[in-house]
Image (tube, rainbow, N blue to C red; front, side, top):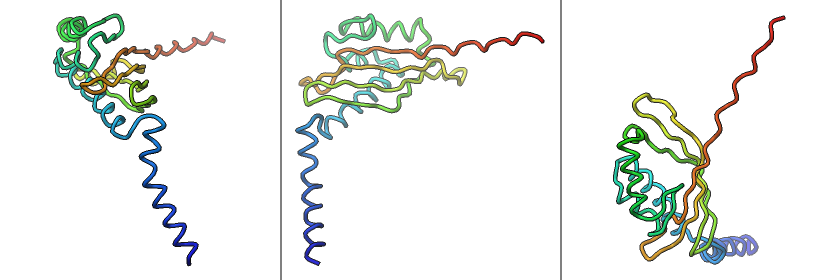
Length: 160
């Protein structure tokens, strides 16, 4: 009986100590939550045509593909909606993986871009991200898209 009580007490102490261990070894639970919210804010801002809100998910000198800095980033969202079909596109992310520490992190998440007009998948791929913690919270420092390659055409069979 004493062994069971000791084991239970040891288990409780271990569970209480885990949050401190995880924070000392990398990102805290709060960091994970804030980074997940950053990913959501990014998608919602671009999908609802909010250039300033989208640019604010990046650092002041943040990079998205070939766009660098706040004004270029905001300009991208304007062009996305005016000339690139962004008004009927929705971003869907899954399988977010975050690694790092209390100051810097790396993220990777799958991307599916849906065309709401045609109810079709427009594009798939993944984002690869460098994130930094700023006084305003977590922000993207650099974000790249790695698009999935189109499937190869099926080989044609020769007539026999």
